[in-house]
View 1: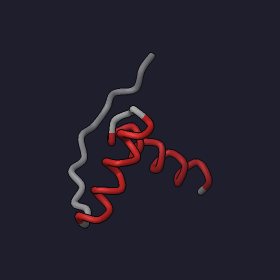
View 2: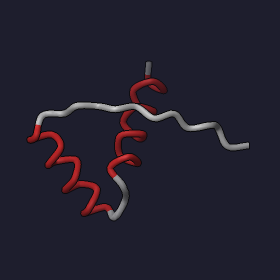
View 3: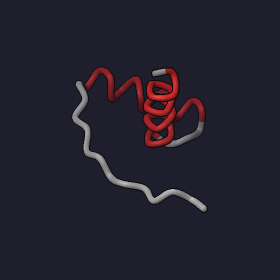
View 4: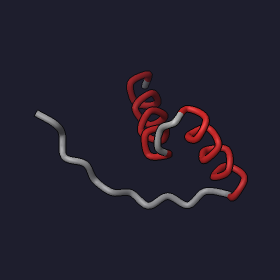
Length: 46
């Protein structure tokens, strides 16, 4: 069963947004997927 998704609005400096956008394009995934990876990694490591 897939967990329900919640929406979070995040404000980033323009420079970080650009890096996020470029990485997403290079990896051919969404910025959302990258942010989710980062958050999961942070909380799985503790």
